[in-house]
Image 1 (cartoon, rainbow, N blue to C red):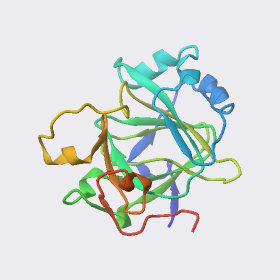
Image 2: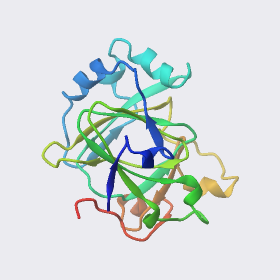
Image 3: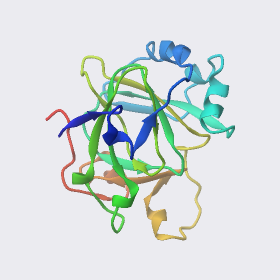
Length: 208
């Protein structure tokens, strides 16, 4: 598949590059983080959240709302799942990484055709806002030797364990964690764990 850049006009419906934010301390810390062989995600990463100015940085992204700074890292080339939140997500990579994205309105009857998915390269050091209506999931690495280390900023509590509330609307069957609605491909580990199978078509692998 063609891999666009987040600076290309094709990315405009999915998100934007955030200019002017001070990210030097975050970048320095990210570059010191290890790169696991699989994919690991931590909603709140103490190493990043304890940096000077980190709390103000996160709250600035969300207009004063409580926010968290997490970390997604590892090596990955596959789509596997797509998720969305009720809020934008902000990503900052210590390494170049690739985002696989689609639009929420492209979901039909709780299912998305993976032919709708597009790929975008985010250069290291570029702060990217991924809009709330953009489907996304774990980044893919651009260089297998480096893997990826990506800061993930979200409203506080996102991606933590969901409550045991009784489902009330059809969309609730997609709710996988707090503020996290998930569509899984049948081939994914998440599908085996009981996630809603909501992706049809190829489980995209950018290494191909």
